[in-house]
Length: 351
Image (tube, rainbow, N blue to C red; front, top):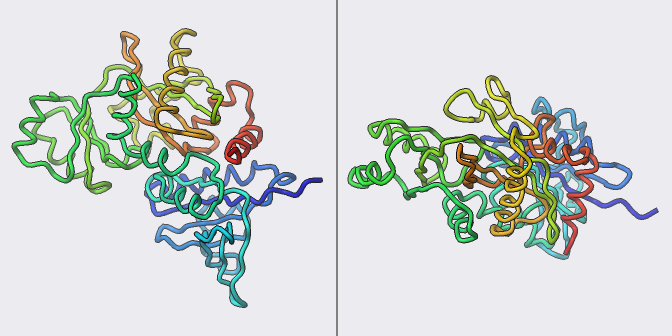
């Protein structure tokens, strides 16, 4: 029998999305085939401390994993390509573990934005997921939109700022993009710092809120219609899952709604005709290629009442929780969760 592949599952991170990463990682860890894979659990605390965790994966569910000092060893990914893995700082000395691949299950900044991917690539460790450039571009709403537009995909009208704009810039913005508009941090996930503004006099407060998450801001026109998404997997030949649709009751599909679905609903498959779903899938593939994605991603768009598709964003590490959209879209074309994870590992190891 061939040896098991050694895969590091990286979870946690210095991001407001830390709790979701733990939930996603728990699902990945408990569904990867242990007959095929030997897992190394590499956890990052909210404060940025890295540990190799050797305890029960159930401790991720209540965030008690880092309190288990017997099973937490300070460790990090070494940039040394000869080591090709992690370095552990144990009481009896330094130990290294060679890895075949790393599977970052990190959401938001300092994990989904190319930082960890760059470290893995520097070390020569294959990444199960998008690479450094694609991860950074997809996290950047402004630059992702510019590239998608060059690929022939419609994007919202927008204006970006570095820091708080002067009053004259706000006045010019109100003329160029009349309310309602959405104010967003350029680089943040799960709707953190995003707000809908219906009156020009509320713009400054919304911008101030977005600045808590990034120094660059983007103001976008509000697109009439609803959000649809599509899972994409693969490198050369791409496979798309079924499209889904988000039905919201309020103004914004925010962090609480995304992970609790208090008043919102996710329809999978989307309540659209076959031709519209085909266009959603084709547009998702075009965006995926334009931004240099590989292995997997979820592409989100708006579908307007007239049938236009307008790009919203790409999630390069979408949620892997039991109610997450990405695995449900792929389940719609016959991939159960273990089979999906198998496919992703295979794509990650492709040269």
